[in-house]
Image (cartoon, rainbow, N blue to C red; front, side, top):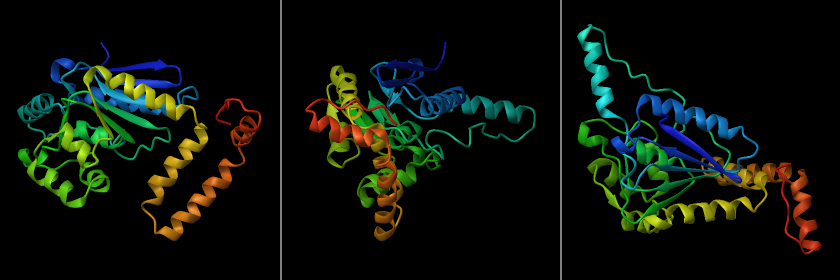
Length: 262
């Protein structure tokens, strides 16, 4: 059975980590499958928005599969060779840009690499019982899939350092208070709420949505004057699209715009 499930609903793709027996821990196979799915969905013209979630009601993802890692390390030591992690260099959390909107539906524990996956998404919605954290320091290591870099860019720096250096878990309400998640909803409403947000985004011009995402992510790394020039450049490109004409025409004709991503 595949450890990653992909379901398409209208213009959305729901990617589900499907290892509930291990709280959706990321085995090396799961990393490979989710990376392959990311690349496929990135290039799928029929998919506008991606939703990432976990199977079951216990965990979004509890991080790297430590049991698998320990087993592989023991096997390597048995034959006298050094253990080398087979993790991919390019994954959804490292160096793989996704121009389309990605929403994390956090259905439970999001720990370690699981939280790093959520941090790599654009918007995070959590179930009421969710708990989030980067526990790596409790195992004498640090996050290695973007946690030390994305978390301080998302929430106040001091709070990010506290989470990183204590390894403590953050409750759903605390995560909402500090801006780590956008919304907290009852578990039964998690997927309906996430799909409703995705569909709301999909009502807009897809090229404009992707350009807005690119402008925000790249612009925040630039000085303001450079970021403003970059915004103008992206705007000039979007204005040349067919969709940019469809919007004003639909408004003038008092009808709903039909955007085609062209």
